[in-house]
Amino acid sequence: MIDLALLRDQPDLVRRSQAARGNDEATVDAAIEADRSRRSALTAFEDLRAEQNAFGKQVAKAPKDEKAALVAQVKELAERVKQAQQASNEASDAAASALGRIENVIIDGVPAGGEADFVELRRVGEAPTFDFEARDHLEIGEILGAIDMERGAKVSGSRFYFLRGIGARLEIALMNMALDKALQNGFVPMITPTLVRPEIMQGTGFLGEHADEVYHLDKEDDLYLVGTSEVALAGYHKDEIVDLSDGALRYAGWSTCYRREAGSYGKDTRGIIRVHQFNKLEMFVYTTLEDAEAEHLRLVALQEEMLTSLGLSYRVIDVAAGDLGSSAARKFDIEAWVPTQGAFRELTSTSNCTTFQARRLDVRHRPATDDDAPAKTQHVATLNGTLATTRWIVALLETHQQADGSVIVPEALRPYLGGLEVLEPQA
Image (cartoon, rainbow, N blue to C red; front, side, top):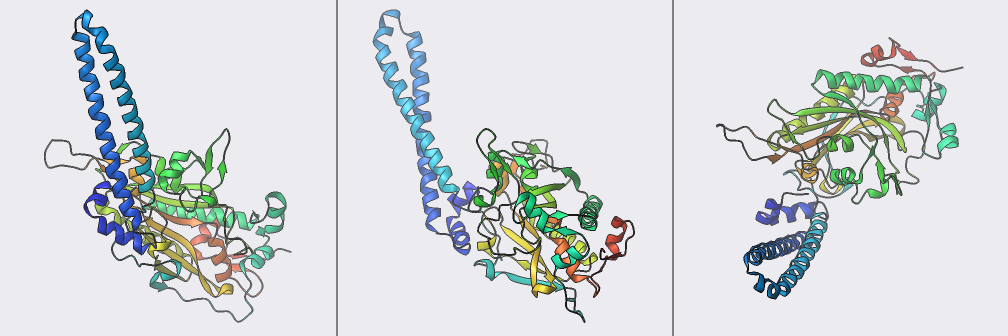
C-alpha cells in the first residue's frame, strides 16, 4: 500500500500518479474519506473502551449494596463497546479496500499512458542479418533436438514443452552463467518455494488486476503457484526489522515459475515465448528508499552485461505508468531483437517498488543515527529484476543461427557448456 502520510499530506501527487496510470482520480478521494472514517471509528471505539475500563474500576470499588444497581449500566456499556468495535472493524475493512485501489505512486519522469507509450532509452548491438532464410527458434530447436512442443502438449496441454538434450543443457548453462554474475556482485543465491500463502501473494501485489494469471490451489491447500521468485523473496523477511547498516540485502532466487497467461490466447502460441512454465533467476533487493533509484540502475546494468556478453541486440525502455503493475513505481524492460519476428521482445524486466510491498508485508529497517538513541524504524524499499530465464533461448537461437541449422555458442557461455562452440543439428 502507499504511504498514508503521503495520501493525507499530498493527495494531488497521488491523483497525478493515478491519472498517469489511467486510473480514476476519484479513488484518491474515496481512500481519503475511508481513512478518515476508519480513524474516527477507531477513536470512538477506544474512547468507549477506556470509559468501560474506568467504569469497571468504579464498580469494583463500589459497596456491595450498590453493585447490583450498576449491573445494568455495565451491560449497556459493554453492548455499546461491542457495537463500536464492530463499526471500527468494518471501517477498517472499507479503508483497506479503498486503499487497495490506489497503486504505487510513480517516480517523477515515468511516461504517462499505456503499453504503447514507453520511452526508448537506448539501443545496443547490431541486429543480425543473414544471407539465407532465417529459421525461427522452434524450427532451430527441433533441428537441434532441443525443443519438443508436441510431446509437451501431449503430457501437459498447450503451451507446455520439453527442453531436451542440448536444449536442457542450454537453459542450465544460462542459469549458471547468471548465478555466477549474481555471486560476483554480492547476491546470496536462493532456491525458493514455488507455492506461497495468499498473504504473501497479496503482499507483493499479484492478486490485483492480474490475479487471473496466477495458478491457485484452492480447497484444503489455499496456496498460489508463483510466477516469479520475487514473490517468495519479498515474503522472506515479512514482519521483520532487517539490518541494512552494511548496505542492501541482495538475493538471487532460482525457481520454476508458473503463469496461466490468461487473456493471451492466440498470441505467441508457437514455440517457447509465452508458456505456462519456465525457469528464472530473479534478483531481489531490500534497501533504503534513498538508495532505491541507484540500485535500480545497478540491476539494469547487470542485465545489460549479461545480454551484451551473449551477443544479443537489445533496447532498454522506460515503461509507461499504465503498464507498470500495481507495485512498481518505475520499471525498465530490456527487449532483445528476434530476427524472424522483426521486432524487439521482452527478455528482462526490472522494477523499483519503493516501499509499496514492504508496507504490505511490514518489512522495516532502523536507520543509523548520530547519537546512541535508537531511530524510529522505516519501511524498506524493494526491487526486482530478471537475470536469466527460459525465453532467452529464443533470442540466442535466432541471433546466432547458421545456414545449416547449427548455432554458434557465444564465447561467454561456452565454459558453461563444457567448452562447446557450436550446437550441431541432430541426425
